[in-house]
Length: 207
Length: 207
DNA sequence: CTAGTTCTGTACTGAGTTGTCAAGAACGGT
DNA sequence: ACCGTTCTTGACAACTCAGTACAGAACTAG
Image 1 (cartoon, rainbow over the protein chains, first blue to last red):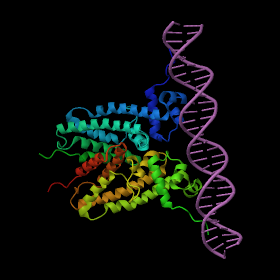
Image 2: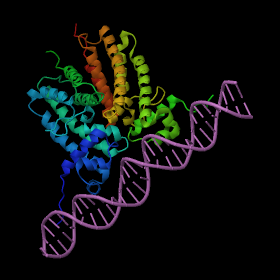
Image 3: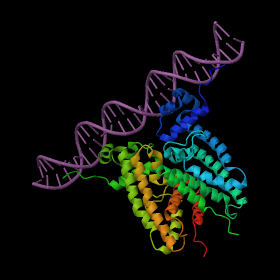
């Protein structure tokens, strides 16, 4: 009946995410988004209701990606829960990739968690961004806390430790890695931080 | 001989810092800076060379503030080194205050480390910002690492732990707290994170 | 009091920005 | 083949912004 869309919504929001990540929200104009996505101004406004809308929906897609990826990366048999936590910490060194098949990022500041970066920049004046970022965090929290519980069941972590507290701390470290990475520290240094964190996880009391 | 300045340089840069913190670099216009500082456009350009200059010099002042405050907060007798580390972690919950006598911040996103926030937003495209932020980090690193060494001397921390690694990790956690705070988590939650981190610090091997 | 120097306020320019609109293009049903 | 519907494109007007220029104010040495 009508003319079909000539773009793929997810693909467009993906490109917008990359743009927002590299230049920040206030650092990208609608024309930048237009260039990055290939969509014209008019279509952008009609489809996403301008910059605000593009950001919100891009964050929503990002959330979906996390909600699928994080549990997949962290769920599994109790025996290998510690390995998964270890791998998760080490992967944080390279930042959050745009997609599974895309190399994480050229410069480290653009590799930070999209939700975190937007929350830091405009979260104070845009409560929707804050809410979306919080949703992303919650999804990660659940996945990490579950993995911590698995490690506890397997006797790799102190069963007396509060798994939620531990998960909060681990995610705080992961987000902190984004910041320290933005300072320009080498991947080797970030790896060393991640390893230190892993080494300090509370092991079960000896015997 | 000539007309004297009618403003105090440090006071102006302080006001600019507050503005940049709350609205971000790209979110504040020169007029915003003018309004926040009380200086006219002309004077701003003549004195600081525009927005770039204001940011760089504001960060420089911030660096000076850290370079004085952090060692003061973390240096002291070995016996109380652990207490100082503990207090430092807990203070991070409320963010970095604008000044010693000013309450840290209204909303938590503006309470994050000024240097870190700027590095995250524009560090990728402004290497001077990256450098200044790194300087801030280095100053903190030295102070924290020294305090860790003091705690080790006093037998409160495992002497086999690398003090630099530990300091990097602690600062990563502190910066991560800024991010988690920006998500909107309660101070109680942030305090819990800080306490968890402190509890996991490596104690000397029993006996 | 005057001359010289530095600072301040404001108006201006050119570039860049946002959001809107209308004209045309691509489709499917009839 | 036509028509209604939906999408796209490009242009447009109003506005904001960064940076500059200039005229005048504040001050002091002599």
